[in-house]
Each structure stands twice: as C-alpha cells, then as structure tokens.
Image 1 (cartoon, protein in one colour):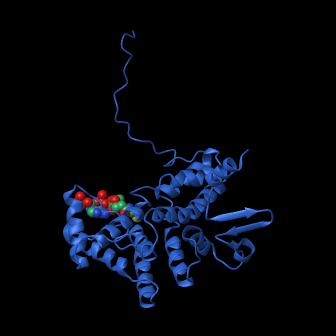
Image 2: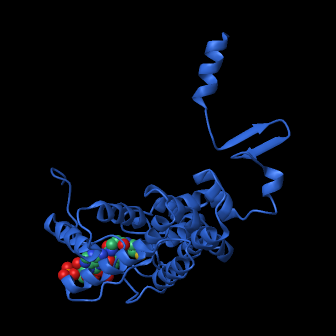
Image 3: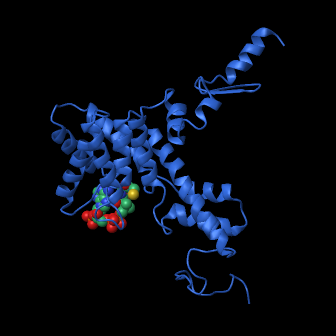
Length: 273
Ligand SMILES: CC(C)(COP(=O)(O)OP(=O)(O)OC[C@H]1O[C@@H](n2cnc3c(N)ncnc32)[C@H](O)[C@@H]1OP(=O)(O)O)[C@@H](O)C(=O)NCCC(=O)NCCS
C-alpha cells in the first residue's frame, strides 16, 4: 500500500476527540487515568463535545439540565415504551433505544427547536428584546404554528423543573458564569404566549433546558442530544423495574381492558357463499 493510500485511509477516520494507542488512551489530550476519579461524567461529556474541560460552575449548570430530564413518570411515552419493550424478550439496550426513539419534537426533543428560536430572536432586528419576542411569536402564529416548542404541559400548570433551571441561570448570572439573556427571553416568550392565548402556558422543561444550553454556548442540536443522554438513565430504571416484575408482554393497558373497535361490521368476502 502506498504512503498516499495509507494517509488517505487514516484521514477517513480523522478525529480530534480521542487517541488510543497501546496502553494509552487520551480524551482531547488528557490521559484517561488522570480523568478517572478526578473528572465527573458531565465534565467528560462537556470535554468530548466542546474540546475543553468546563469551569465547575458551568458543569453544575449542565448537570442540572440532565438531572431535570432523567424521568417524566411511568406514563410518559419514552418511559412507558422502555418498560413495555423489556417484557418482549429484548435486552436492556433495545428497551432503552425503543424509549429514545419516541423522543421527538413534541416529547423530550423540543429543546433543539427552542434553541433555534432563541438564536433567531437574538439575531433578529431591533434592540428591545420584548419587542423581538412579540414579533417572533406573531410570525409563528401567522405562519400557522400552533404549539410553540418549549411551552405548555399536559399535567403541570407550573413545571417545577423549568422553574428550578431558570432559578439556577439567575444564580449563575449573578455569579458572572453566564449572561442570563436566554432566561430573560424564555420568560418573555412565556408571558407573551400566555397573553396571546389568554391562558397560562408555562415554560416547560425543554424550554428551560434550551435556555441553559444556549447560555452555556452549546449548538442547538446538542439540546436534543444531551436530553437523550439524560433520559437514557430514566429509561434504564423503568426497564429494570419492569423486568423485575416478571410480566411477559406488557401492553399499554391491563389485559382486561380492551379497545374500541370502530371499523366495519363483520361481513363475508365478495363472492363468498
Ligand atoms: C406539551 C403539549 C403537548 C401539552 O399540550 P396540552 O396541554 O395537551 O394542550 P392542548 O392540546 O390541550 O391545548 C390546550 C390549549 O393550549 C394551547 N397550547 C398548549 N401548548 C401550547 C404551546 N406550546 N403553544 C401555543 N399554544 C399552546 C393549545 O393551542 C390549546 O389552545 P386552543 O384551545 O386555543 O387550541 C403542548 O403544550 C405542546 O405541544 N407543547 C410544545 C412541545 C413541547 O414543548 N413539548 C415538550 C413537553 S415537556
């Protein structure tokens, strides 16, 4: 093999993230044996994604978003799916992956969309943030938008996770760790949405999660990526609990409750006697 071909193949797998040689593993240049026992999982996630270790106060904020997102109750679709999947004879990896596959724009994945909107608002014309938020929402509804990502919740009139995350941004702002501009924006969006709809539509965990990640300078798609990492822990717990119960093929409701059939009455095939 020519040197040129060899280089071509090596470059195919070019990475800045990790280097592995015989007896030596380095993440972003740091030896694994130095990281183990000294650096938290959240700090390691930050290191892998961003290239540098975070300040401990930044890491605390990131960790808070992950704690907030771990679980949303046994009937939240991702958790319920993981709990059902494990009773079908699959492994824990399949059960977790099944739950993760239910995370989308409406359930758990809205953070990415919120972040994209926060950045759009930030970059829109004008200096008055409240006016920029109002214009953004005006356009959203004019263009046929119905559910603004990051707001509203099926159960919570006030989402305790969102409130706590916003509080932590406030504390970090006072501490000079972040600017606090996205927390203000999310609160202005909540107020404007509530004014427009004439009913309370609270900022939810995805909205506050996105505000934290925007404050910390993450790219929008990572809002979904990091949410998925955190929720995987909750899905693991539900799958293990469900497995421990010993039930086989757990369906969405107890077996003695059937569904409503609304199709055609029984009939014979055309041409049949
Ligand atoms: C989470 C969600 C599905 C809960 O919906 P819900 O409480 O069942 O809301 P409903 O479908 O009963 O709607 C109730 C009213 O509130 C409005 N509403 C609820 N959430 C809204 C939102 N995010 N933006 C605008 N209006 C909203 C609905 O338009 C509806 O008003 P209408 O009667 O005038 O049509 C919904 O708020 C939503 O899709 N939010 C955006 C996605 C998101 O952030 N998901 C993450 C959840 S943690």
